[in-house]
Image 1 (cartoon, helix red, strand yellow):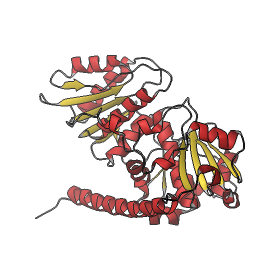
Image 2 (image 1 turned 135 degrees about the vertical axis):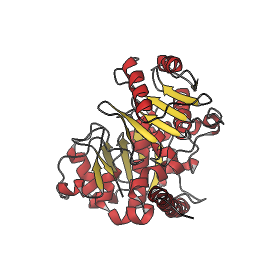
Image 3 (image 1 turned 60 degrees about the horizontal axis):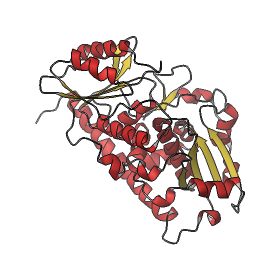
Length: 372
């Protein structure tokens, strides 16, 4: 049996992906057994615990990036990992590996707002407001990770900084640096039963995710989608089913008119409002539905789109809209670290652009992303 060069590359990538998944699964199972035993102490008496928390104003995509980064930090420094959600019940959205990972708002308030925690606490800011001095604590602060509890107020995907700190740990745990987030997301962000019920059973030949940063319906995006579909020969056939995820139902209506042979499907076009459990349920269901599509087209800059690409676990048949090129082929499932630090005392910043990192297409001046 003869193989073309392209088919051999696909086989090699698939094999490497399987090896990486097995390596991480083994490391993660050992981590779970060690940090979540049957006789696990109560939070007030727990030592070496890391709590990932986020502000109520950020969306689900950013929250997932923040929690995944915090889990990587916890595994790297041998802390038990926990999540604190001040505004929504995570059990309604995710099926977490262990429910004891959750720190309820009342628990968090009692322990850290009323000073009932019996131990030292380190606070880290990894949000979009983080400064170089905050990143300095993570990348250059070896001695500071002796605290009994670490609270990470997150919003960004900062794993590239952790790889700078301990490349050996990540290569040993994940094998493939271009699969770090996808492997974490697969274990940490499994949908709850109520979210699973929202995900259609039938796959779609095309999934389209549209995110407008103008905070209104933008018809230019419809035109860009059509231009992309034509340039990449992705127009659905007469029997095709196309799934559209957007805050604005006008996109579905416009594409239904233009793609006359296709069946346009949606789960929900919810209104932009304060974050609620129901909103997050639909958002996660949309992420998984997009990921299960044969071909995927996502919006640039969007952390929602990053999730769909990562959950798909392969850049094959995955595209991102691009103002200059209509759309571009996605070459990795790793999300971008949008606002990487500009200066660190302990790191040669030239290494930030070494073979381990690539510029972020969405934020080329400051953003970076991992590559193997």
